[in-house]
Length: 140
Image (tube, rainbow, N blue to C red; front, side, top):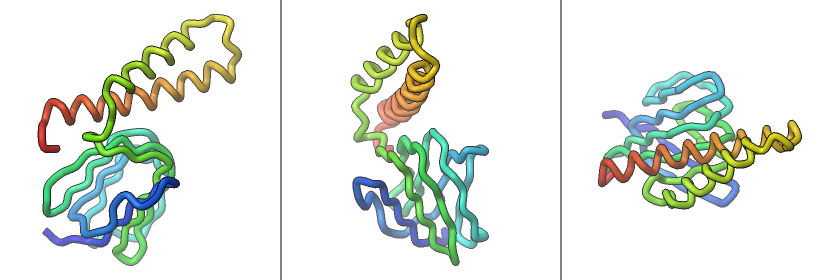
């Protein structure tokens, strides 16, 4: 397969810089797949699973917020949060999910607190889903 340069950079630093064959990420308007020769574009990232295909195989990650850009064949993925599936602490993600659900059950919460709890729940569910997939498919 034909490759293209991919750079993944978060506020914490460089995550990946090398060739890729395919990238699939969740944008705010749905999933976006990128392969070599893709037209120039910029899109805001939503919350979801990212898939990166390289010569070493497929890797999955929880990818939350930020943006992706394709410019002259080079892809820059600049998420707010990016965690490879094998680095996600499943127990911690499940605990965060429980905490968020309890916050949502609290009828005395303000609208702001409820929105924050909803966002925390969505993040926890994405992280949990990606981590569970990694455990069910070793080597991914």
